[in-house]
Image 1 (cartoon, rainbow, N blue to C red):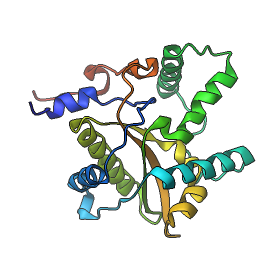
Image 2 (tube, one colour):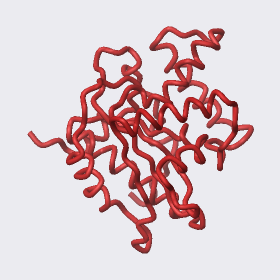
Image 3 (cartoon, rainbow, N blue to C red):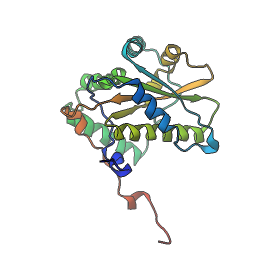
Image 4 (cartoon, rainbow, N blue to C red):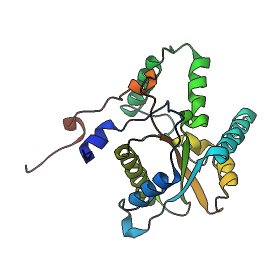
Length: 223
């Protein structure tokens, strides 16, 4: 039975524990090619993607761990605005609390929370790591295009029985990733993404983040 778009949207969540089962290059290529139909203002198609698995992925993860251990700061942009305000601050706080509650890490267990955060460096065990980049001279509208492309990748992955976790965490390591994949100097790293098969038995994958009701964020007029 074919999965509907609504079913794919409902099933898609950020997976933070993957099985080691490999994903073929043919499937990754198929997903990326299909995702290229994502909306793009002026048809600029600003996205550039690097997909790693196997030995290249392991080498990149090792290099990233070295960078993080050195304490070097590489970030090119703030993932969240400084001094985040409500309601956004509360939503982010609640998301974190709900996440750590699934794996029984209380707020005062700082080392436990940092260890979980560091799982980003391992792509949460996923066999495929994706990096999404674009020319840094492009602006916010093209960043939006890359976001729509990524969402399309995520939904197409679900359709094929796969799962993902978008990882802006990797925006902390643009120089390390850029040097590893030979990213052109005029391009910037926007985000990473883990791709693979979810570990259904892992408690962290039970998290479904809260969403506002439509009447809280939308006004329908003339209907």
